Length: 447
Image 1 (cartoon, one colour):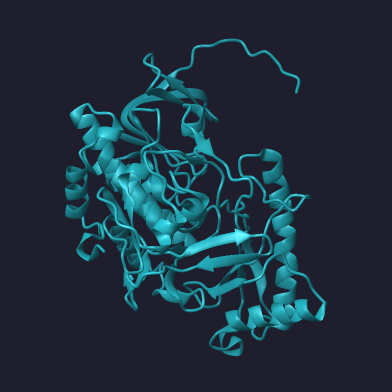
Image 2 (cartoon, helix red, strand yellow):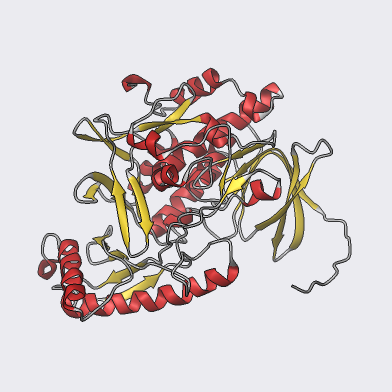
């Protein structure tokens, strides 16, 4: 690749904060709210004009992982700040009652995307955190010691700037900050496949019947078996939203010409995924519209602003959460919360689900999985935290991301207060603070 020379320049400092959070998805918004409520000056940097991550920009419109099936009983296991967010959504009439999904094996909860944007705004700003939208992180400046970050570099319509901090939180989803800071990471040779979500409006609820999502899957399977159609993936998800006239559709799978998954850290592949995803959306909808009762007058009302990336970089931290940890409902002495979602592997042409092998139905999440190697003042929360691909196939969903985000916000406060590296934060005090805030750590039902 040819290069051009850029002149050296002095970059203005936008501001100095105790805690700098990069990425406003579920992990980042909880991290910012948590750190600010701990009394730390906090800024949340987000490249879009709204928060929510995959739930909003990815059009997901469903909280997965808030619940677990605990000894046969479906229970909400993600609490703390998540409860407050759900309350804000309820006041906006923006959330459904939980519904069974994945062959009735676990609960998920649909929400209105517009309401989620406002509720997330209010959660973060009411905590005292500062928001900076339309600001894309593009690099870091390391401190003289070489083991800590001095500033994150951002680009916006206002130009280039630096944001200094004492503790940084990488909630970018792609481990951007961690990678720039030299944290070791892994990218699987076969990434989980992304999707592009879309929403359908104008559904005739009475004609559609009580469970049209099962009808859609059956009709698609029959069409493939008959050889009349070929769809990007099996196990489509077509479910109603807050208003039953509107449905969400998750049935695309985005790939490169060689059949590999689109890589969310490659701009050319992202572009291909956007083009392919919109084409797949309309092709799949055409089938649904003409074959499924109740959808004859329906139309696509919205395609998500961006394809939904499930996996790119995963950092190496003090501990890596594994698939066996998830399936065996593992306990950890440094638990910061729990995860009850099954392993959900989006592989070529389908989705593979693997369920917990023990009746408790959830694993604990260790603090060590959000502490990356090699950088003293960086925490990593969300789908790019320290996990194997199998572990990440479960713990990348919203519920555990809420857990990680709230925990790193408190941990950042403890690190600053004690003048400590993040790896040396007193875990017992972190757990006490989280429990006092209503978080469920899984200690009451440890196995």
